[in-house]
Image (cartoon, rainbow, N blue to C red; front, top):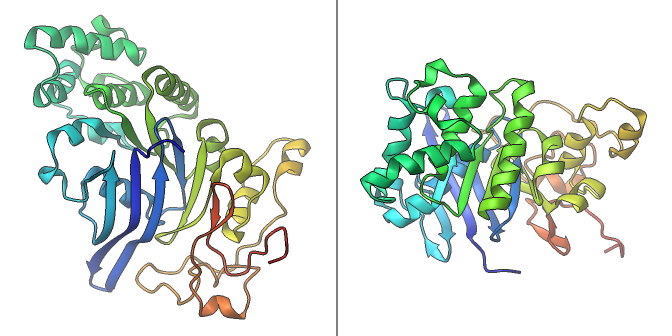
Length: 324
């Protein structure tokens, strides 16, 4: 396996609340290689966005390590080296709130170029035009517009151009299409795929849309109540899902034909509601909703186990092909 670009090791992030301590991230670990696209999938409140925010430095971890190109970067954003800030960028979910409405697109794009000293001041206008053309926006038409004068998809393209301004290696995509019209989502996805290929980017793609990952991600990771349930290469993930929660998510994907329905795993029934993150049940955090739970699941918190090359799962009662 190539040298990792990102390594997350036993990462935990806790938030104190009036009701008690919330473990938004609870000891997760994963590794990304250069050129990888890891789809981090989970329901609302699973901890996937907090994971991205810790990686990018918006929150310092409570414990654990984050390594970027072998360098520990667990500190908060304002304490990180400038070269790390430029090489690891994020695109947020809602472009309407992530772009300053009082600045033109030219002013928005000029900030990362100036902060990270990309090119000379004379070169930066040409760089800004190139960035807009890169995300399929005519520069002469958009450079002097304000965010409120353009559509949601165009705003997200500007946000992506801003993220690419510093020539990053790793881009965190926090549900980049969920706030957009369906008609625009496909264009953004195709743009992201093209840019990944042309610029040799690595993506951590955070989403709740599992069906999207079939065509975008090289690997898929499932998160539930702050913990990872399963990580696998995309083809293996969709053809041989193992964790009951993964099966539940896959079986709930809407389809439009009998052929697509036949490809889905056997319908997995979820029992009850998602537990409160302040009061996560002991043992396996999914056991209270799991249709396959056993007696030990209420007491024994499983550990991640590799069951095939690159395929790891956290489940007490998974039985491998040899019956072990």
